[in-house]
Amino acid sequence: MRKRIFAYIINIAALLALSFSAFAQGPKKEELKVPKEAFPLYNGTFVGVDLYGLGNNMFGSSFMNSEVSVDVNLKNRFFPVLEVGYGKVEDEEDGVSYSSSAPYFRIGMNYNMMFKKKSMSHLYLGARYGFSTLSYDVKGTVLDDLYSGEVPFEYMGEKTNAHWMELVFGLRAQVYKNFLMGWSIRYKARFSVKENIHSTPWYIPGFGENKSSNFGVTYSLIYKLPFKK
Amino acid sequence: MKNLLKFLFLGIFLCSVIGLTLTACEEADDCSLTGRPSPRFSFVDKGTPKDTAFDTLTVVALNTIQGDSVILNKLTGASYAALPLSYVNTKTAMIFEYSNGLRDTLWITHTNIEHFLSMDCGITMYHQIDKVEHTKIQIDSIVIINSRVDINEKENIRVYY
Image: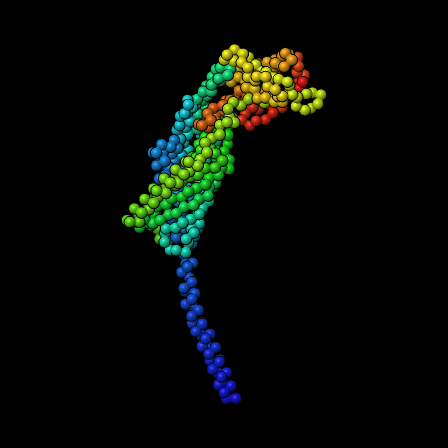
């Protein structure tokens, strides 16, 4: 009987000790987990300038565009982003000339696929909604090679608007202190482009040639604003 | 600094590879549909509302660059044909010659709407068909089904025999 009581006491003591040690270890484990999700809501604002659109033009493309982007790091996972740019085109081919220049806007969000890492460098996936309101000039002549004769063609200040969406894959890497560089490739799908009676817009700033879909590339220099986290 | 150089090189390399690939992948504009938007005529037998078939049909356009031009030469079994209109004038005349030697003349009154398509496809001419007049040698009547002539191919004018 004594043995039994002794065994009971030992058992209870052991249980108590175990639960105590478990309790004592509890907060430690919690502490270990916390840093993984420890990013505050706001983690900084980033401002970027795209260099690809400018470089593209220097290498012979008739399109030129430049854009500035602002994004905010939320929880190191979500990066709501606003992109504002200006696109320009001037082209002449077979007696037809086309010119236009207009601003464009994109709004969307990136999702950091490496959100657990504390580094500013990361890979991301994103989506954008883009739109532009623009006007363009087209000049040329229409030649009738059957019945003979030609019709002069000149429509200046044709107005239109365009809406599209983009899927983005990109990466950005810290290169020096608050400076980062990033590139992204984008699949752009056209929602709508308003057609005019005498012309179909050919170039949409921020979207590219007026086709059902386009690919795009950006190469940006990014600066993290030195505000408090 | 090492990072910066690495990233610059990687960036330039990737950009040029992606840029080149994307340029190579982009299909050229298909301008085949935009050759010369012409109204599509369909030929129907009035007795039975089916497409009629001629032994042969020849169409001569009047007042062309070479005077009168054959724009359709002895087409056999024709149930439809796309026949071009003038870009400059608003009335185009053409003669239908049948295999039996008989002829009908058509006068099509139209509005010309020039339209810029793209830098690759250039400027083309759409038409709005306002009226079709004709002789009644073989033709019974003509109905305008779709007055707009553009790059979308559709039946525009139905000719009943």
